Image (cartoon, rainbow, N blue to C red):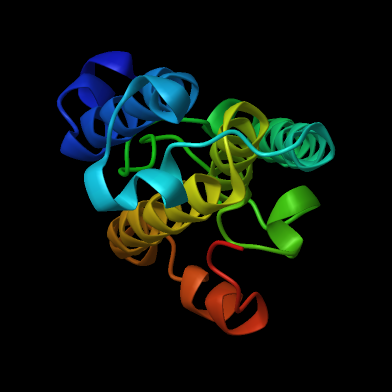
Length: 163
């Protein structure tokens, strides 16, 4: 893993800021921050059974994330550019979705938010995270197509990019 190169990647900084913002905001928004007219929608805490469902989504996301990490193995990098000695991985989690790590992060962030607050805020967080990681996946795929000629064929077989 080339952390020096990843530290220069704006996508890595973006995902770090997104995750930190959600980690801090999800517990603080409900009941602590007045959101004006959107207050009822976003600044409330749902009943326990709904929040427990957030825990289930969080665990599912963490499981997909770990499966993606394990499937990628030594090819893992937080940046969008593949490592110089990387190999194309199309097995494990990658036989079902092209970016399972991003799928896991989206589910994890959504579940975390639902567990701390409410389904409306979790839906907003989930959609924002999904859009962000879909965009990051497109940027990463430009590198993958250049590096691995077989990636275009893989894209035809595994249609789902994230979720």
